[in-house]
Image 1 (cartoon, rainbow, N blue to C red):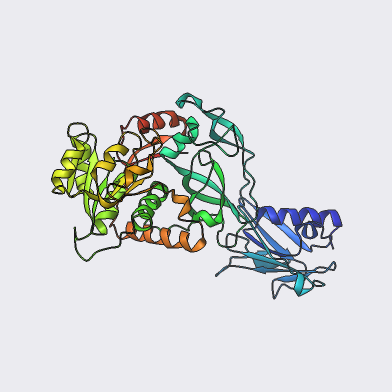
Image 2 (spheres, rainbow, N blue to C red):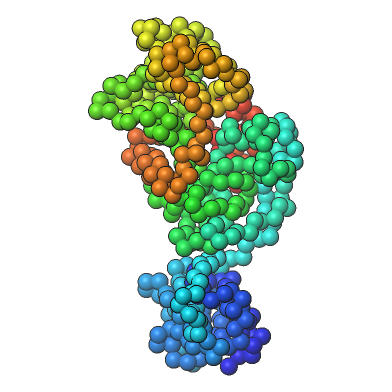
Length: 451
């Protein structure tokens, strides 16, 4: 039998190399086991484990009480080494269950630990904001600490990171940071799980998520805000580009406006989408079109108007060269619009109140031109207008809501009823250029950062 120090050393080695551990005793008990009767072998990038007793059930009983059971995945590899008994190859998918013999069932505590065989570095690259301001406050660094994960979290190695207007709001200080500064912003990304403390996800899973601190090489993510493993037909680029803006557009249409799918095209309500060639705007136009709404799109310039028409808008208005209010009245024969989706904010809100129909609704969801000035509520009475200022995260609070909207969104994408357009993929080091392009209204579609 091994010495106590060797047992502890090999127990630690197991935790750092196996894929999934189900622990029915405390981790401190596991690390303190004096008699883990296991031998380890190294062969390039893999390890194999064997017991010195007959391994017919691939388990061994340690004198200090725990039973360790190896449960290999389907078709396990076998290894023969002289007098060592053949044992399962510990690879992604293998479970090790450790159960205390003297433990009472009433107090059983199960935890899941999962790590990649490759070591996770101590430092990483990322973008830090040390104080609110312009794009010059976005500082790319290569010596940031890799975050540690807690129960129910994953560590994701990011591949593509979504760039959204909300990132600029945190950068400028329009939205205050609850954690203060320095701050790593970024609300969505896609990548690969490298460490997991949740039973539903394993290392190697390709995922997309909503969270915080996405402008970095690694991000700790709540499993409750993660989708995956992603199907092969959905690329990591598409997933990162679709999640935040896609969920925003979908919940605005279905939840905020209450628009359901109609039997025919243009049988639904009159709708208007501002900035319809942008990331969220283009998705709003597509989803409204799928739902059968009559869609008017505004965009700056003929090229952007053509793109909005391509996405499904039946009418387009060039906000640079046309009087938007008069053109909308002409299109609707003076009736006005039932629902207006406004991500522009200050520059368009007053016009919205002119264009909206009697008993209509204005949904203000963005501040691209600045936040809307305080509203005199009496202005709404002339036409019995409803005004909303919804936020995506208020619609995905419960697991059921998250499941419902992510499922519906990716079904629209998989069936190609909604298509994701990426404007440009910027290196993470060029995040300042991405923010400049976004704020300058120079883009159509989604902006991504590549790690």
